[in-house]
Length: 66
Image 1 (tube, rainbow, N blue to C red):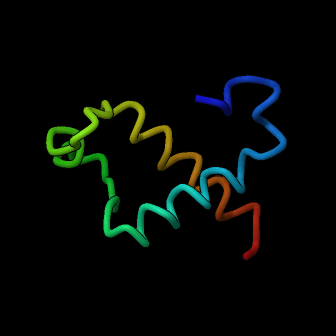
Image 2 (spheres, rainbow, N blue to C red):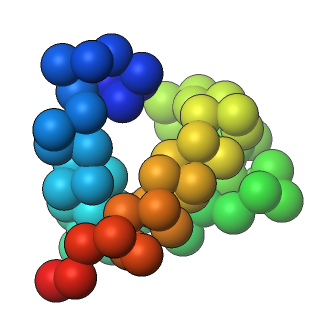
């Protein structure tokens, strides 16, 4: 949600890459658009938010080389 604000743009790529890396390290994530993760999510994260995160992750992977 911070990416839609002008203040969130400078850290846009690093934020999503760090978030997905943390999710992987915790054994959580691998969210797809099949909808399974949205129904099983303990925090109730809706599918549109998961889709937005996946889009940002793909965008950041193309732009930032780690």
